[in-house]
Length: 487
Image (tube, rainbow, N blue to C red):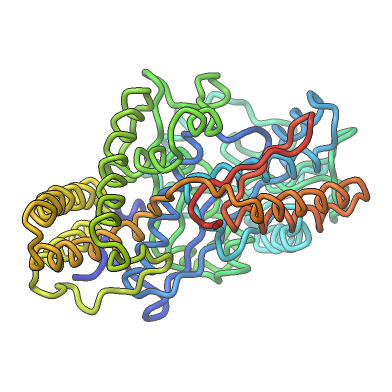
């Protein structure tokens, strides 16, 4: 059975559609880098990391692009509070985001693109939209004319009539309709700005994703992801811009949206002040437990964050880890490795043995719109069977039970790799590793003092890829091994 997905545009479940056989082109709206990430932000990126892993496991060649919004009102406001430049704010909190998602086992996308690196392309796109009659200039600002795009509202299910009747905001000077949205904002004193045909300014939020996604993936790419609160207006506006710009060609084949995280009765958000930072979570719980929590339930459901939920996830993860460690004691060198990049299974229905039975059910669950709840239930069922086999092998010394355990451990390793669990034995205390990390941090600090920021960022990114999270403090950089990557 092919992978089935729930498409937010059609509001239905159907087989994954791809532009090219065997390839998936995927884009996810990334963070606005103005503050430390909270667990609600990061759950979305854990999920799309998992979706990328699973599609790779099922044999697709996946090209995954993520963006950073690194020019925004909130970045400018934060810069004023911290008394540093907006560019430094964006750089600082992009690093914080990368460290936090790496701690939760998120792999780096194939491409991370930043809005400020694509201003020229955005200006050209806005010029084209004006030429096509889909946008207009007003006093140094440029707005998209929503009335010009017949398909506006098709993703969110809203009609223009309903939006007009519910609209209470008066049109600003030069703005033809309250529904029209900014493509370009005229510069204000002290703000970052770039030249344009309409004067100095900066792009609106929505235009960046339309421009960057199509630059790297082309029109009609396969999957666009993000949190469900981006459906309107952000993703609705992306569609309008891109399809108006490209003569009504389809922008995206399928839309996937992750449910929000709730704290008590409200959505978790920085504006509401009810957030829990990722740093706080991983200080109290194993990062793998936080990843386990993030993957429970459907990606489309809203989940509630609580200490009880994290404690339950930590206990469930510990049962898996305990089984894996016990397999190591019982099997020694015969215990299989957990592969970092597992290969696709040879068929939708693996071998008819017991381990193959579990693996087949695991795949069937995840083929059904990435149903991790059912998939994790299969993993725990396998673990219960494996624990019985462990007891029998230890009690009776039965070779057949040893063979059975080896097969179950192999299936468990494959499932764990798909889910992104590596079960690290512990942080590396090797003097050699510690010395090399400290030496690289010294080189990074020298680069920062010499204002060689690209080199400093490259060192940090490489350490992050190797599983080393770095925290800059007033007393210097602190580091920790986040996963089993460094040994």
